[in-house]
Structure formats: structure tokens, C-alpha cells
Image 1 (cartoon, rainbow, N blue to C red):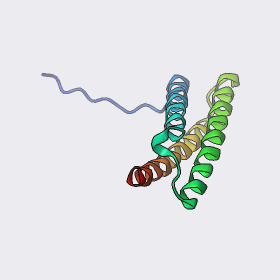
Image 2: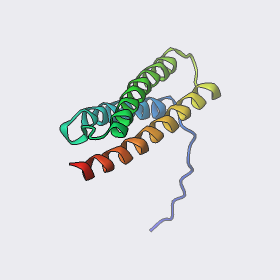
Image 3: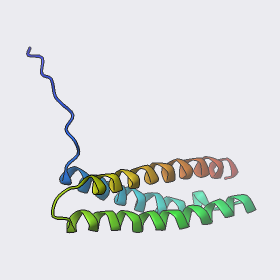
Length: 110
């Protein structure tokens, strides 16, 4: 058996496009789950969290769309575009974490 060494390549346009597309699809599913009966707010604090998550999710969706458009419209992949995509990924993970905490609390109440 041959030992193969693979080098981690820096992300390219296709990789960034795929990541943004998947995040958009997953975000749509997460927002759908947020609006399901399982995540209905039961307390005033949960209602505030729900509204914040809903607002942040919609804002994140717009940010993903902007980053996708920027990627499509650019002639070549630059460091700034890569930084923009990684910034979106960071915001996405933060949203995912906050939604997970909210859902955990919602499950306890239901």
C-alpha cells in the first residue's frame, strides 16, 4: 500500500461557491425549524431570543447572497473575497450555535 501525502490546497472559487450554497440551504432549513411549533417561544426571554434569531437569520441570508454575488462578479479570486467568505462562515457558525442553544431551551419548555 502506498502512502500518499495530500496537501491541503487553499480554497478556490468552486470551494467557496459550494460552501456558500450549502450554508444557504442549511440556513433555510434552520429558519424553517425556528418557525416550527417545536421552537415556539414560551417565555418573554424566549420571545426576545426568537425575534433576534429570526432577524439575524434573515440578515445572514442576505450576507450569504452578497458574498455569492461578489464571488460570481469578480474576475479573479482575491484575498479580500476569501476573507469575506470566511467572515460569512464565522457568522454562520455563531448563528448555528445560538439557534442550537435556543432549540435546547425550547425543547425543555415543550
